[in-house]
Length: 380
Image (cartoon, rainbow, N blue to C red; front, side, top):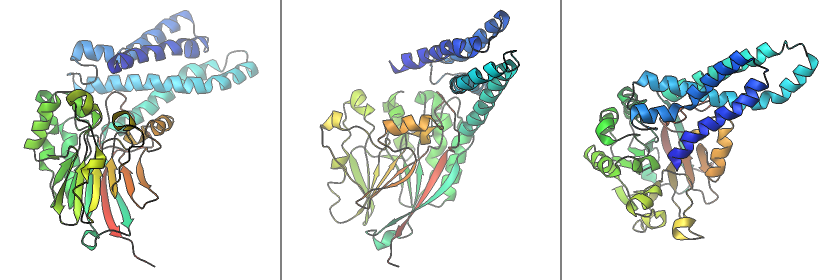
């Protein structure tokens, strides 16, 4: 159903653009035919990826072909948004200038602006992530963890459109931070392990004194998840499924699998059980791909869980203005950055170290590798 929706939706957008952009712009017959072909080409992205590349979301096509089609498709979506926003302005201007001098701005300026914004957004989704330093203070932090450094990586989405060079850069930046701990919160790859191992393999070089820990995201279960799990274990990523480990006496690292796992492998994520063995006042860090999954569907109403620090991803930072509101609604208000709770605990939501190629746009929302430093809060 998910694939069907993303296949049909672009053609709905193209259908809306015909009356909203072409007819409202009073474009003549030849121009209508040209724009119709342009919109159909843009909308056919997922159909052609499936037909020519073997998979709508992870096509085996040349990288430049994929990014060109991503740019064209993203520009069409942005043009639709701009067109709908500009319709009231068009109505006012056409009444003021009935001779039609406004038409050139409508037919030329809007598309140029839309595909320019798309080019910027696609480039931001493609380029290497920034390093984001974050300081989090706790009153109850054990003395031994004062100054403790954690690198948080999420949503790399290595694919035929995000190749090995990008993973190598992420690993280089993460190791350069000299972390005590590295936490990876899912969605590492889009594609089958036989095809994508070469692009993702540099993550085996991640190094931290207390280890590299991993919790699965939803995309781990879309492509041969069992093979990926074996590969991750071979590369040195310690997978945490409803359990916690103690890399040091004052620290407990727990993780849960993404809720999609319940449908694929019949394994229910249960963060409330993760820290049942952490009973000696350890500082608890929970790795959970989604910042606020709806566990009521799995465990019933009133289900609660807690940790001193929860690390999550999944939201891609809201992608861009406008979409960020929808992302917030779908994730109980979490979009990106640091959130403090009344009990003193914290949730950090990464904007992601990569970008899903389905809509690979980032605007006012850079990808990131997060370096979190824990500090004990002291009285002033």
